[in-house]
Amino acid sequence: MIDKFLNKITIGNSLDILKTIPSECVDMGVTSPPYNKKESNKGWLVNKVIYENFVDKTDEITYQQNQTEVLDELYRVIKPGGSFFYNHKIRWDKGVMSHPMDWLRQTKWLTRQEIIWDRTIAANIRGWRFWQVEERIYWLYKPKDDNNIGNELNSKHALLTSIWRFAPERDNAHPAPFPIELPTRAIYSILDKQKNSVIIDPYMGSGTTAIASKLLGHSYIGIDISTHYKDMFTKRLANITKDKLKFNEEINKHIVKKTFKQRKENRLFTGKYQNNKAAVIQNKTQKTFF
Picture 1 (cartoon, rainbow, N blue to C red):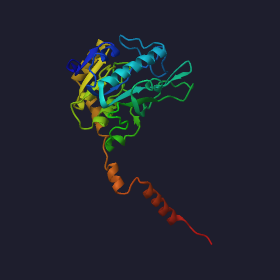
Picture 2: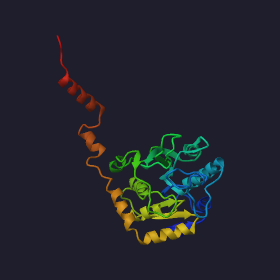
Picture 3: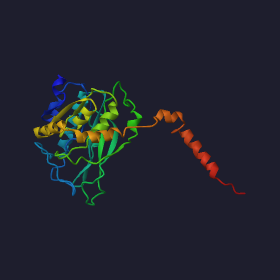
Picture 4: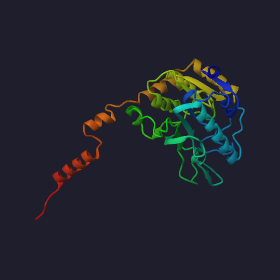
């Protein structure tokens, strides 16, 4: 039954389509939903976001409830031990802050990590608050066998830290695309050299998650409400040279000369070693006066 969803973008409401996908058939996912920015809200440097066939304007309670339901359906379709990366941001409406954790804590997911996406540019340069240049990426985890910790990341992925720095995608007709580096880093870090997994994005947009999935050797399941964005993705898929250049740049960042285990074996990164080293330095520099 999953075959009818594979390697295509299904047009429709995300929540409705998710309910038709079988349970525990997806390995992981990445997405960035509409932010409920009321359409009229915009920064001084960025135009207001207008989506095709969708009005990003509802009351916050309804919005958060919908996001909770979507995330719980994703929890159902993703296999135990699977991950989902959820890109969102802190927002203000008439001075009242809404934080993604407000609804993430209402879902079935375990929040494994909060990653800061440093976009390097602010949308709003007014001084009501410090310029906001970051968004958030939540690494959500579905525990397996009552294990809330999960598998350890390969060192070459973990060293990229919890602050991800890359600029937003600019050369894209979609109103709010994320750069291909984002899903590439998420998928590659979790699945490493594994191939033929299934990646889902319930707000596929111009297909960035699908492109990253294909370049990494995986299948994808995409959902979007707009046939226009689906057509945009089809044209993009036919010519992925630009995407592949940025993809390769990201892959080349995942490199480590020595693993944590190797460094530990060489007496690096242990408290005892660091304390002894500090004592040696102090003894060499210390002078005694009589």
